[in-house]
Image 1: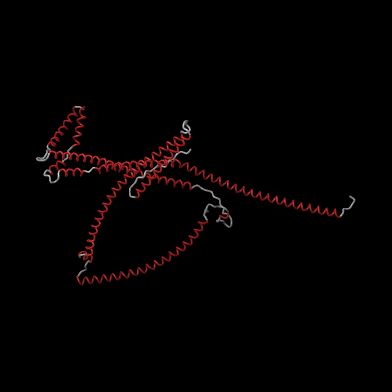
Image 2: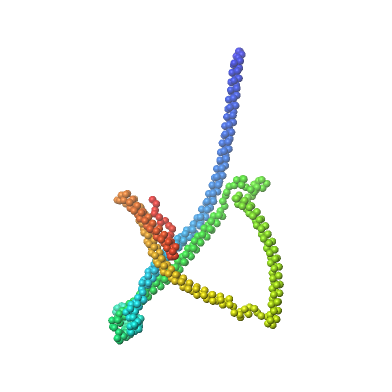
Length: 506
């Protein structure tokens, strides 16, 4: 303690002090940096917290909006389901009616084909070959050939006699009356005899041809009655189809109206949106107004378009003013021209009146004079009109013949398309049946204990390939139907109800 420090020790002390001062400053800087980083982290966390709070609030508000929408949708659910069920029912009725119309048209085409096969002229041709006009008994045999016999009444009487054998005495009296009528008819038929000098074999052949003709007429009348019934049934089905179409359109309109009403109710719900400060353009003296109820949320692009529209309206207004001035000038000019023409017309009328008084001593009506005189132009026009009517009549006959040919082609195409539709229906039912069998086979895979996995897999692949084959055949038939439709044939495409008709997933 009593000795003095040397220069070296003093230097070392100074160095040590400088080192300590540097270490102190480094530690202070590090502490400041740590505090600044901590403050920055706190500020970032605070910012994140505010952002998260805002997102949570927006989520809560969105949840409230979704809850209100859910309540509205639950209120409309019953009405919506009822309309959907009604639409499905009408579509099923439409499908049924289309199938029935297709069947009826097929039957009608078949009946018409059977009627076409019957040819009454063939029997008449046979008679003419058998008894030519040069034969002296031609007129008498022709009367016998064309004579009508009540053959149905005879058959009915015979059947009535067989059925009346087990009835009471009152019915026997009626049979006696009918038998009296039959005797009278037999007497009338007995009056038919072979003309004197005519070959009895020829007479018998004529009678046989008459029976053949009557058979054909009976068959033709029966076919015609069946065709009339089918036509009435077809007309009734067509009317019912139109009614169902109207009901379908009405139901679809009701669904559209209901959907519009539902959308309107959903649009009435209040939705909260967030805006940033730079998006607010309704500041009052640089501050937010206390009440924002009179403000409106608008897009920047829409606002720009409205401002541009203001300039466009100014230009349009200026153009309209120019057009108005031009129209006024034209109106003034036309008014002056009208007055000049009217004064000129009065002068000409006065001059014509003076000329008529000098020539005829009275005024003459020029219209009556023109009617009394011969109008060569009108006569020429009448002749041209007659020639045009004759040419039009010829052209109309030609078009009617083409229409008849087209009607025959349409009937054949309709029959062909009907066969195709029936084939499509059969393939559709077969496809549904195969899908059901496939689904039932898949459901029984767990319960069955016997066939191996390879066998079941092979059966399933076979059914799937068969279904695909049926689908391809249906597509080919549809393509052919579309091709026939383009050629002019009318095809009633069956309406298939949209439902879960596909194979079940497993």
